[in-house]
Amino acid sequence: MADDDRPLATQIDTGRPSVARMYDYYLGGKDNYVVDRAAADQMMSAVPESREMVAANRAFLARAVHHLAAEMGIRQFLDIGSGLPTQQNVHEVAQAVDPDSRVVYVDHDPHAVVHGRALLATGKNTLFTHGDLLRPEEILNDPKVRALIDFDRPVAILIVAILHFVSDEDDPTGILHRLHEAMAPGSYLAISHILDDPRTHAIGKILTASGAPPWYPRSRSEITGFFDGFELVDPGVTVLPQWRPPASAAVPLHHTPDSAQELRWQVAGIARRD
Ligand SMILES: C[S@@+](CC[C@H](N)C(=O)[O-])C[C@H]1O[C@@H](n2cnc3c(N)ncnc32)[C@H](O)[C@@H]1O
Image (cartoon, rainbow, N blue to C red; front, side, top):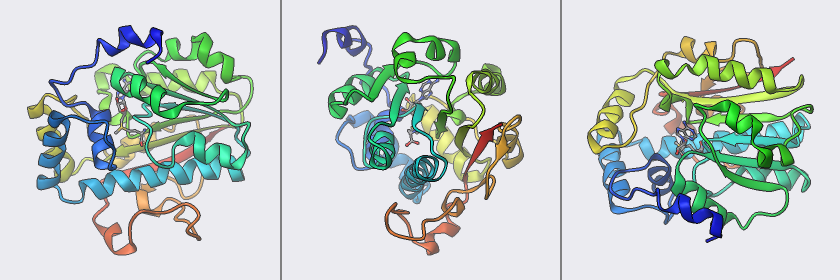
């Protein structure tokens, strides 16, 4: 552990489930504790396709980054609420297209940051930093972030499976507006978000009962509204399996078309800032 990670490490709470660690467990990682596994197992009992949904979300993230790097020429990525490193991490996908691509991971979970830094053993073009989406100004003005991301050039900001942890009181629209202001023309915003659905409400009850952070399902039109001021790219806001399914196995989809019917409670989209 780096010396400057020690204060962060003391903030790690192993008594309550952490979203980052539960997500790691779902994806087959080892950076999780009994409390995380217990809450995630309860969620899988209530909604059996939960694990598949997490994999489908992760696959969307990889497809999105590949699309932005390979088709749209994006070379800078700011991944807010990145979680712990797992497979198909943003820097791996982006730097496979161009090794000079720059990637900044941001998470508010101290465990994700401390273990993320250790696991990534990052090169000079990749950084993992501690930050909170609720305070976008601090992320945008962080000198470490600015050392890698030039906001005068197009950047992709990834808000994937995180905005549903932001309540209306915390003003997600205002946060996105601030990010929009900071993005140069030609930049992109990617969002995935859970839908208002009996299954997401069932999971929400388990999250709250277990002491994990609550989540806030929203309607498709509310989620589409988060892209106001941006130009949605095809195919718009869709359920995860339908967002540009890959023609080849180069970027795995992680699920079969049969299961796509079940995966109807999370949507995603990408939009351009003109
Ligand atoms: C479900 S995981 C998603 C991980 C990754 N974005 C993905 O889609 O594969 C959500 C992550 O967002 C982080 N998170 C939640 N609220 C946050 C906030 N206000 N600021 C920064 N990170 C946050 C959690 O700690 C967790 O790591």
